[in-house]
Length: 178
Image (cartoon, rainbow, N blue to C red; front, side):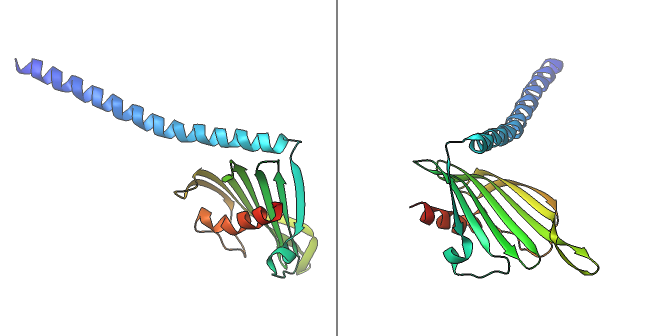
């Protein structure tokens, strides 16, 4: 009689274990599917030849002077902005932020820092080396949920603490398209 109760408990433990493994799988693969969907949307934006590209002087937009100036590029269609690039030139190199949007909300942000090379103990302004790249997949913009992949190490730039730190770039782009 006890062996029968033991088999029932064992059966329920197996079921519970299987359910837990299944839920972990859904969460893990669900995020990967979301990243694939984001990358597919980004590829669609990159290949969309119908988008209109606008380019603006970053210094004029912000009133902030930098050593190397800056630009803000905005790609949009009639109804929405799809891609933004902000590129700021500094005395040591360049910082570029690329934001991809879907329905007005960021879905992917790529931030890079490039530094000038060195030759004979001086900066070589003809050579730019990428020293850092962060790819930020926005899983939920409103709740500041994202997955970040980093390559390299920042040399002179500061990182963002939150996806909301990119809000000023979005506002500048929105202002230029109007």
